[in-house]
Image 1 (spheres, rainbow, N blue to C red):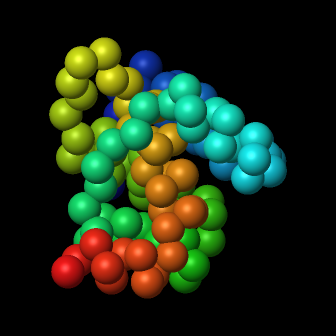
Image 2 (tube, rainbow, N blue to C red; image 1 turned 60 degrees about the vertical axis):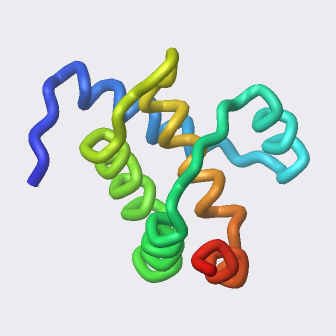
Length: 105
């Protein structure tokens, strides 16, 4: 079990509510992505969270991605946890297993 400060918990709730709950078309999301930062995620990370998304559902996947980013990622150059979480969610949702396997080669 991960213990978050009250401030971290509020930030997580804000991020999670904004990440998946805003239903968007793919075109709307592409527009958003033009201004959103993108990051490199290892094929293993994408693979893990994609499998989690398909096996456990969206709620568990986004909670796990948020916890992963807060515990395993270091912020650099004006990055925010929200930037990282949103990009990870986007890449997991928009990368298929074939793409991930090709990244592993």
